[in-house]
Image (cartoon, rainbow, N blue to C red; front, side):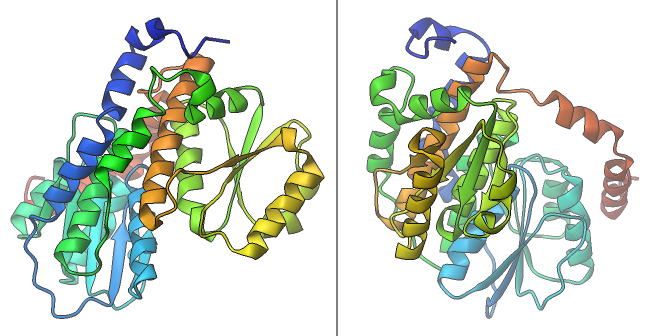
Length: 350
């Protein structure tokens, strides 16, 4: 097993490039917010919002939808080729590349139906559709893989909902930088919770993340980052539901990872305590952020899981930047070609 405290590790490619991107996390979040706040859009009322995205962009939709639901706005997420039925006052489409077929297909239908939209993208066909149909677009950095664009895309989404006066969020960027400084590469494992988590996961062939409402997005982000950055299969289930079925088939060599929110209900707390006692502390790991302040807590969690996934990629000796299987499957799926052709026809390029 590699020594995560060896400074030499972080000077080697591809880890040098990966960590240099994540180290700009807070700056990317801030610049994304600024980009989102620059949009211009007039909507008389916004009560029902549809968010469209998949993969690295889809998790941004999940987070945004949850924030909007917390203030009483009906927000739904679609991750496939169809528009969810509903009376949508606004649709927010997020595609890092601007060429995501699962996002472009519903966008084309929304344009046909004259539903007001906002785009968040770096480039591609989505940007061109925005220009042609005068759809407000918040631009994000496109020089990184989509999952590494997470803070910039999240910032853009936060900026959009701020600009539309849908909600306000107080983010302490200095506090977030301080937390990041305690999980960076130069911090020794004994004092670094992200390194400790990576080492714990590296010891098991089957990590499984158990979540509940308040930490669902955090757990899902961790799952995806372990999949993509560390090339690690990871189970994912919700409690208490998983304790009524999945636990019967739980492999004895699995590790249960439990993100824990300061907003956790007493019922969930008692359930988790019982689960840990039943399985044994050696088979369970609880994750907690330092902050206990609303969305600030979530942002720290997102930082923690991103760094942990990169440390695990080192332990697994895999490249955290490339996705050969995802790319291969996309090239074989002719659906993408059909959707992109339809989009280009809409632009008059076919």
